Length: 173
Image 1 (cartoon, rainbow, N blue to C red):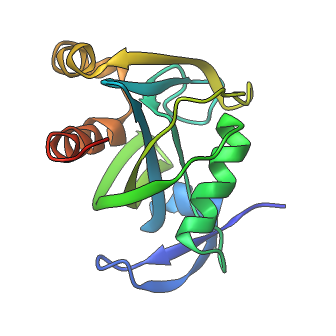
Image 2: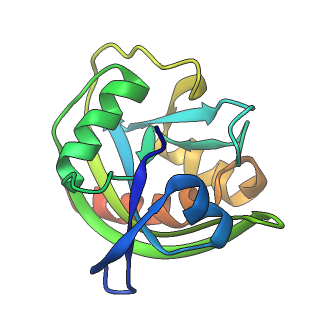
């Protein structure tokens, strides 16, 4: 059964629902989230499985997805961290942004993306259908690589990561 995504306006107010495939084919603005995991000056990043319908093989944040219709954002984050990473840890929302990327003639991401950050150093059990590789990278090395090799990273990561760097510069995580 296909997930029903929450369609939103530019202020993140729900305006309806659409199937995941339809939302991405028609480029409909929908609610999403990106989870960043940090620990001891490092960030956990994932290389997306190369057979993903877009951005396959690119590096991205630890976990990202969409809440389902009728599901709270926090419940969706917890669910997806379990499904994708095999773990859960407390996370806090630090901001949001809207982005639109086109990947093919009829394949778009148009998302109101909520950005979450958490600290976790436990064991991970990545879902091989979603994640090809997980790795910890120092924040300094990641910042340099994002500048020198942006084509290795997903489009949303390029926008969200600087938000996280800014947040971390002022927090105790």
